[in-house]
Length: 169
Image (cartoon, rainbow, N blue to C red; front, side):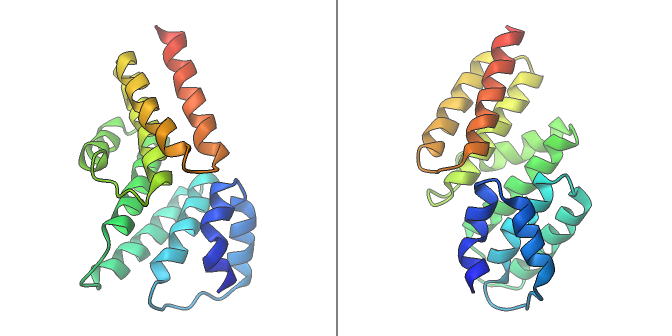
């Protein structure tokens, strides 16, 4: 399926509205690997601040992976990265920090986008704790992950958090 092949790229390159538009025109069928197409769709909803819809899609993903004997660590990391992002949008620092502590060192090497996002969220939490040294540590991780991506969004957030930390020092 063409959409499955390019959904992550559309979302990571800032075309989340295009992705949502395409999905709205299609009938998605539940099949093996359905969670892989749902992840970028959930991200598109998050990036468009449709958090209720994103949470519904995330729950669908969780329901799918709960039925699998071999649910991958990669999909679990993707789900919790999305949840952590939603918590940050809701300014729920406590829940965001719990997920960061759970995943920061466990995100698979194949998940550079998630590493970059979680490192940016680590910066967000550090700023809220006035721990500006940790922001630079988090941004080092984010920069390393971003080098493997071509995601302008992750870079923009990294610059934002670095600037916020600099301004508050």
